[in-house]
Length: 102
Image (cartoon, rainbow, N blue to C red; front, side):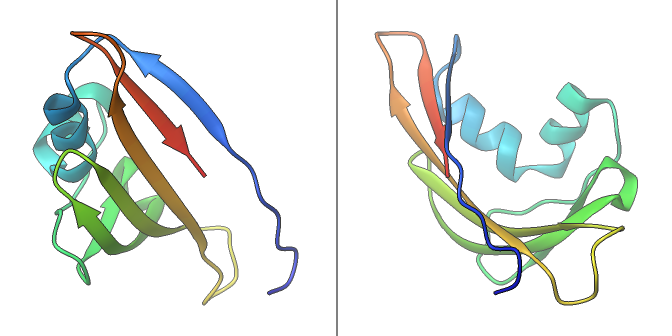
């Protein structure tokens, strides 16, 4: 893999895991919080696009309200170049969700 780099990021959001999962796997919900067109499904193997097609890729794996794995790319990247991201969701207290991205 050329230019391969790793990173990780964690954030806690005051919302239940099911709502975060839905916002990241439903085109309608994703569009509501980004105010940009999106087509996303939680079904592995399906393509997705966000921000009006600027970001696109494929859903690789999901487990409802637990994790999402996607291969992403932007319009500027060379054909075939993708970044694989995993969003892990866990409860943080009674009404918040920790999102670990790596």
